[in-house]
Length: 306
Ligand code: ATP
Image (cartoon, rainbow, N blue to C red; front, side, top):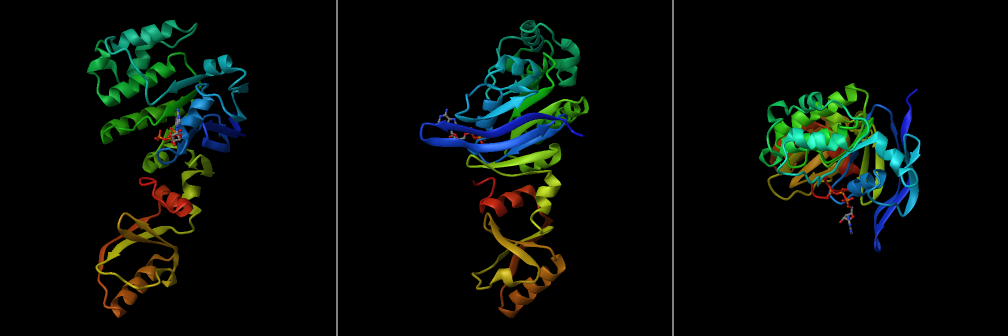
């Protein structure tokens, strides 16, 4: 049986009259990579900040490793490591110097050089922080979060702003943390990242948790394995929901998207209907449904434009 390591019950955070997090509940199991996915402003960072003691909840409660995040914050801090979006690093120190400094803050810490190696920073050991790339700085921020050997690690949008290769390197690091038995809670607005990295995903929108499951189960919940994307070359008066197999009709950018459980039937009836009305279909693409489609299905908006 999996052990629940984080309990979140009805957490609320308000900024003045605005409710940024509106009564959310979830649990995180020991050893899993748990993702909080949602568009900008969904309340992901605020949720994470309440869990790590940076913001006091206005309602509800949460505990980590059995410790209440408000009452027992000191204990919580011993078992968690945190990398925030806006970690300020001392630019003039070297990688090694800042890690030694952080290690000195704790009674117990991991050996510094293996940690530098795990974060793929060995050749930067003596480099000043200001000379590091975005991805290297992000990996250093994670190293700093790991220096006291926490078993639960919080990462706030760890790959935002990184190039594809730096993102992949960071994904590998997160996989390795999981292999070591660490529990990782990360926020992201990249659905591909959430899909690849996370055992389970909580989808947030406008302060609410709107879905929580494994990536595969979330996609399966659409009851539509495939998405057919296309445009008509001119305005068309067709009831697309009546086409064979179509479960839902959506739009993504300027394309129409048909979600279907019968790909062949949908394509055939789309083409026949277009032919009978003298319409040309352009930019036709067929793909499997994704977490982005789950978000669109639930909110009517795209993760990117929400
Ligand atoms: P992002 O991906 O942009 O970080 P997010 O999902 O993490 O988004 P939050 O940063 O938690 O979202 O913000 C949730 C909402 O609360 C947003 O509408 C934001 O503008 C608002 N907000 C966040 N911090 C404050 C603050 N200190 N004062 C007032 N409003 C705030």
